[in-house]
Amino acid sequence: DVKVTQSSRYLVKRTGEKVFLECVQDMDHENMFWYRQDPGLGLRLIYFSYDVKMKEKGDIPEGYSVSREKKERFSLILESASTNQTSMYLCASSSGGTAFYEQYFGPGTRLTVT
Amino acid sequence: AQKVTQAQTEISVVEKEDVTLDCVYETRDTTYYLFWYKQPPSGELVFLIRRNSFDEQNEISGRYSWNFQKSTSSFNFTITASQVVDSAVYFCALAVKAAGNKLTFGGGTRVLVKP
Image 1: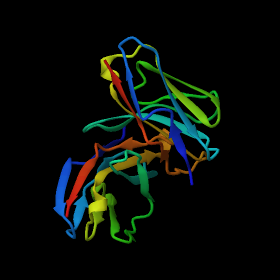
Image 2: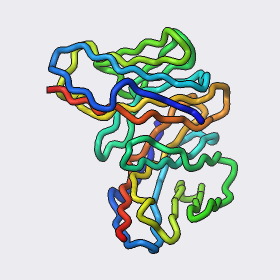
Image 3: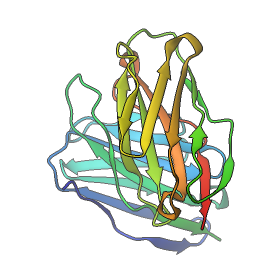
Image 4: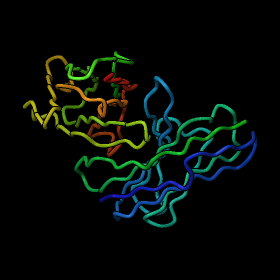
């Protein structure tokens, strides 16, 4: 079974703090994704990566950055957390290539910025 | 740009009733894939189905069935004889070839099945 794990289920941070969210997958997937989930808005893509050290902006990258130093790990960084970044953050991974493979999701991190 | 609309935000049914979730998508691409995911209270999204734009056959998997109609740009999902364990948020999503492996999600429909 594909396993995607995220470093924390719940996180509380203060405004202005630097926040790291970690995601690890164990299926040797090429693609990894970070989404945020807000009520009524579904999931919105923040950043994604097709390979190690490669990253591309999604639909809402402002205020975020990412790092992918190893194939299995994809980190989301909030350089200076703000209250409007309070949300559920979901990581996903999928096989690469030209086919549209399904994405496998982690359990999510509920981040509260106070 | 792509768009997915799930007009129903919440549906409440009594166990054993059928429930249909609507999904309408927009894209100018001719090659695309449609997905349904389930998010139970635990939070982890679970993949249910993937269909490509060239295959309009309806699909049935146990109590789940999907109706894909390109003419109306819809990909609706029906749960037959619902059970309490079906209570979850269900998301419809779209991936188009031109946009790579990115998914565009609808806003989700919360299904509450009462015993």
